[in-house]
Image (cartoon, rainbow over all chains, first blue to last red; front, side, top):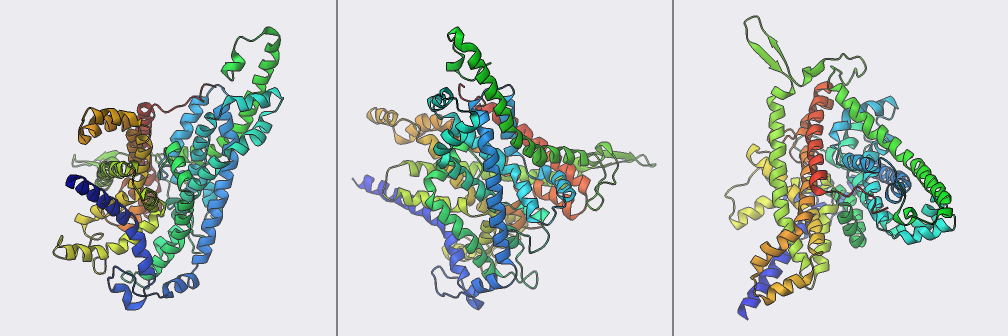
Length: 276
Length: 327
């Protein structure tokens, strides 16, 4: 009996430890973001003040709102483009047998594991060649390298598991592949599209290396770069309050999205076996 | 040879030509459907990769991309014998900075992924148990995963701050350390700081993949083991671990590939620290900041080769399904 109580308590202690470790940094960022002035440098574990100073200064000074907008536009467009190309491509890859299919799938999987740095030099040239340097189009263009293989791969896995019978009926009725995709598969694929779209959106929203390299002015930067480069008057004067406020602003929507779509995201992550 | 088993089955002869026509039509449309994706991937991945490799054999510079000469393997390794008879080696392969980065990357990848596997396993086992509040735990561990890497680097940068960081305060109170540590600035602790943040951020991903594997294990195996009186620890090593191994291996390999190319966390958390510089950091530094465009290309090509070799290993070991189902 006593042993059972010890076991139970230690199990719940472990549970509490996991939750605290997972949530604490975010909690502490929120707590810090509401402190201003010298309060910032007084270490507290519980909320003591509620000053909105950091938020107003982040949102009014500099170009943070512009950066938010850039991130939103880039991520949305890149996900839409990727999904558009991926739906038809993954239909072909999962439902039609043709020569070279295995090789093509292999290539797609390899591209999704590419180190981004390996194409940085070549992409830099392409971006400059098309005159896209320091525009958000450079990012929409270059992010295709990770969103497209990922969406194709996950949607292919998904469509492969749909029963053949639903397609047979359509074939017997004389439906063309295009009709099959739009009329038969699309209604079934909404859940998968939402999941992959969301995961690709998060990946694009968080991307740093290309955003850092292909933009060079405050007006074209995305949020991660803006936060990384946020600095004060001197090297030793890091505006921690502002940084934390900015961090909270970009993270809250993501956390809310993730919590709403929890189950879908977990199934998408495990189905695609993709990077986090 | 055919689209699917049902259509390809030795059907009645009269239907044959129509079905073949149907097959041909499907393959034709499949080709058309694939064109946009293939073209897009060629432009954003294939061509840039080839150009990057090409640049590594030239003396191109950032300001003068097109006015360059072919220099062969000089960026990788070249040597010149001086009049005195001494031979001077130059190039990435004899660059101590590069080897330092290789060592840092490998060390980072091995330590972070092993610890993530252990912690991920613990979290997955907890989530696999039935208890009240499981939903809360699952939601909580998704938070580190959802937070952008740059944001987590900044958040932890603040928590690890030497003067005003909460971790130093906490550790001092608990008596774990005797004086405040400059976690990110010290060469000895910089890697530890990076590891802490990375493990915090990616353990959830590992845990979810392992959890998916755990949930596939049929419950009656454990019931049978319980009846036979097998100790839970023995159950873990004899039943759980062997059965979850495929899922665990896939997760580990994915994470290693990811860890090998780490850039953003280190760039923000410990900038300009040679103790944490990885291959990606050094390559980008040379490519963009130091204007050694060709030299940086050579380094990024080396990283590409390493990851390509590991990817092949993964696809081979992981027995990834490349068929389209049995269609």
